[in-house]
Image 1 (tube, rainbow, N blue to C red):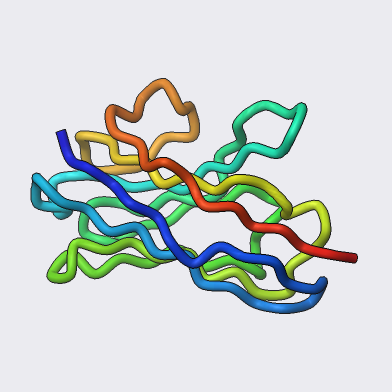
Image 2 (image 1 turned 135 degrees about the horizontal axis):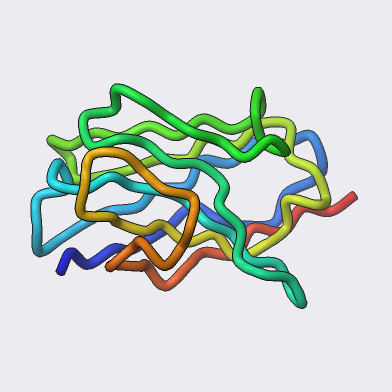
Length: 124
C-alpha cells in the first residue's frame, strides 16, 4: 500500500486561500487515482475532489466547483488541493486517499489508502 501524509491545513478567515498537499511514499503515485475527502464534526465523510491517474480528468462536488482545484505531480509523488474563497462551511478535516485504478470514485469505500488528515478551520 501507498502511505499518504497531508499538510497545509490551518486557521484562515472566510475568503482566504489554502493549498493542501498530500505526499505519497512506498509506491509510485502514478499507479493510483487520487481524491480528497473531508469530514466535519457530526457529519459524514464527504467527497471533495478527485483526479485520474494521469491527471486527464477531475471531479468535484458541487459545493466546491469554481473554488477548489485538485492537481497532481506524479514526479514528486504529490497531490494538491488549492482552495480559494474559503467559506465557514468548508471547515473540516481533509484527507487524501488513493484508489488502485485510472479514475477517481466518489465512494470512500473504493479507496485502499488514506492519510491521517489535516484540519482546515475557516472563521466567518
